[in-house]
Image 1 (tube, rainbow, N blue to C red):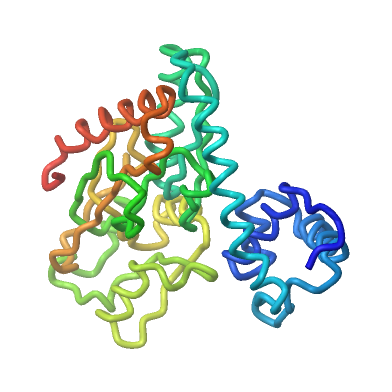
Image 2: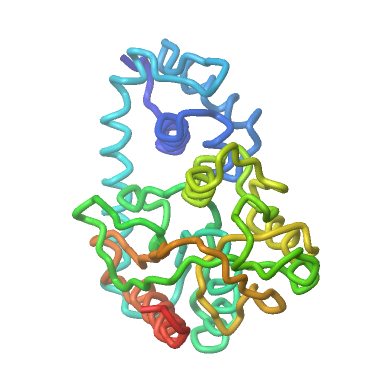
Length: 303
């Protein structure tokens, strides 16, 4: 299909667009300007001699040429990771970068403070926190470790540790004080809820609130967790979160509202691909995260 050699870095971009389903989502994941990504893909298509994507109003889909290229690009990603792992494994020195993908709250509360601890203990190691909602592909080496809210289905992705936390509602003291009755006496529809905005409106929290409240409409929504947290602190409304009282908790200053959310729990899995899990730098950071998990288990209801 190709008339000239294709560059691996261009194929990486192709793979990200193909698996995310849109240029905008891929650009966010890659932290790349969308015009730059579009230009690079256009150059790749010129090298191939055929269009690889059909642009649509919402996202894009692979053309026949793109579908033929996709399996080879995936294999190249796995081979590139294996080559990097093979070179890294013999070196037992704790140095280099460890990339950890995590939901925004865990990146904020756990990974950022952990970077300071790592800097003091192992100055040769650098932590890169990849904060976001999207699930990164560990087989392709998009991250060395990941904190995920769902159990991985890939058998090559190992669960190194996990915790389970109660799901509860939080608000500012000012908001709680102006409620017309004790929270446990109010219906869920009488509270002002803070939720996820597009493109993350299908998150589990939104779905649970929509199932419990007919005609659910959030009082405030954002696609950024820290913006949601700021709105909660400002007294805009109620935010549903896991009761994980980390020593660097962002929940400080908020109060838990005893509202009937049911027996929902939030799980958090520390995972790594089996090719990366035994690298010394990855093992060291995983051990530090497990120590933080052990501290979190001291929170009532966390296990």
